[in-house]
Length: 244
Image (cartoon, rainbow, N blue to C red; front, top):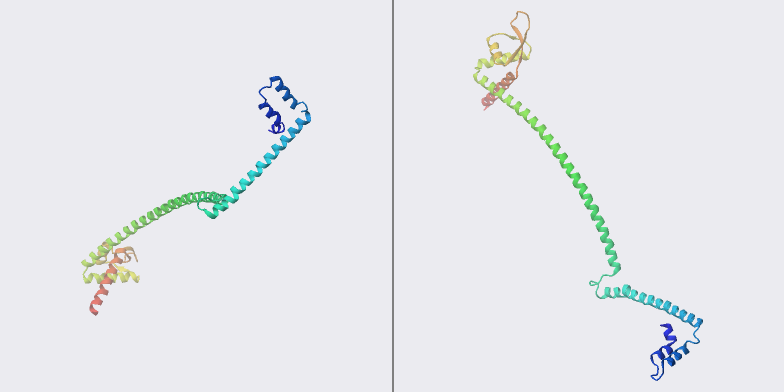
């Protein structure tokens, strides 16, 4: 391009020869343009070409800088003032992108913590179920023992009631005398009534006090204690009725 501009006459002549000129005449005319075209002319043309190239690139970068300035600074500013909802500035977009990345990171951490908490809760539930099962087992065993004990007590109480119903007032007095003898460690003299209440399971023989004597040591059984409680309850009830 530089050479063409510098030698425009030769180029023009090449495309605008007179029609009456022969080929040899035309060649001679073109040679006349390059007779004095030496090394320095070529070097000058090359230097100008390089200078033009450098200047062109410089102008291109200046132009690009101006375009970028308007695209990145002026245009977003104008859009921000006139139509912010339609276009988001690059700085705001980058800030939003950073916030999104940070939020994604926090969400991932929360999901991880949630999974760990879920595992801990499952372990706690398993432990709770195990402890509850153990407690239930203990209470069930205890309830069975208590139920058996209550059943035995009810049986003893029912039997004591039947004995009390069969006792005459004299029998009640005789039983209370035996209870007092046992209570005050006076010994119980063996007789038919003592043998009867012993056979009923109200008292239990331990030993005779003296060899060949008829006075022995007895103790009150659980059935006998229950019968004594029933007798005391009846006496208290009778006294209440008398007071009324």
